[in-house]
Length: 508
Image 1 (cartoon, rainbow, N blue to C red):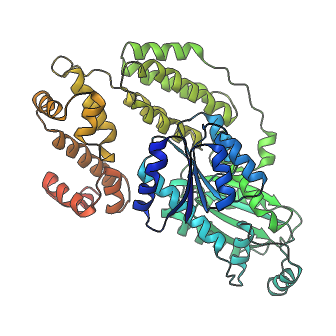
Image 2: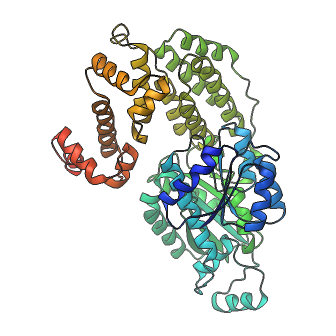
Image 3: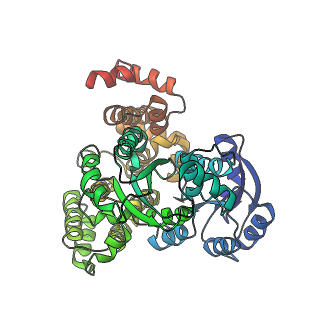
């Protein structure tokens, strides 16, 4: 995959070559630019597969550069790396058809996942070999690879009795984090629906990149859409197996060739799942019929939340975010209004807090804001709001008098970055002390060495993932900060007395 990096921060721009080569030796960094103007020229000249770019840059900002490239029909894939978590920037970038929006500082696992997704999309788009099956024809339509071709259309009509110029309905199930585990079961159910009806023909497609199953419904036996049938008969069956983070969507197209545009529109409708009851089949028509109320910003609640931060009262802060959750759900509001209000409240509270602490808290804020931006269910919103008070490093009564401010900050950094390989040297640099001094004071005040503390957090993280997920050991190792699953298993056995898989079986 040929890659161009457009980034005004020299350490990121220069370091990206090493990062990319470590992730995949087949990645080729063909060009670098320090501003949008130079980036625009370089991309036009090199025509890379992927552009990794910042938003705020001199001479020409990233969004302007990308808009010009899109207007000129340059279809390279784009990953945005930005310190801006503002909802407006994310929306602008998404409208320009980027692949992903990652917040700085970049986490290597997130970058790896995003690059893999881009590779999948590119591989699909380059696969010009067309096996003449209905599924591959529809996949080609879905990815915009099928062009108007009279002779090809005649062949498709002859074989399948359908034209790529004909209208169709599209039923989508967005599975989100459940996609990998449940796509096979859901696909089988949808295919069974299609096989046992005479009302229409259908074909089920998978989109690993978008975590969706797409059922294309064509040659309908009746003039009416089948939307009502799916709402009343198909979704209730699915809803018994899937939770409320799953989104059901419906779209009609005048031509099968129009599927890419239709799917892009559907992708933007997902967040409306916040507004409708579980199991609602969401469509543009349904959204247009929905009455929503203006959402007034609760300034009194913001003032109360900020005061609890100043008072360092975690319990009251939890109550403030619970009130915010209830307030947003009291009436029907647009998803955009809800998310913008929550984001504004989060910023207001953290702005009071971050003046008192090391600036690394910004990373947690960015991750939280990203979770709010992509939320499609109230459960996701609630989970984020529950986590926010946990990020505030209020004094612990037991250690307040015995632990120095320096060691408190060191422990805070360990809690936040133990899974990213943070070292004693890095923490010492951030605290402006020597590595030897910090090591001695940390051991003296906590009774544990830096390495022992890191190990404790990692082992607790491994336990949590073993208990609450179905992830494989190599995935768990990566999330807990281990580069080698075998080494993780060795350490786990030393600490817990059994191997990770034995521990998982013992508690299930």
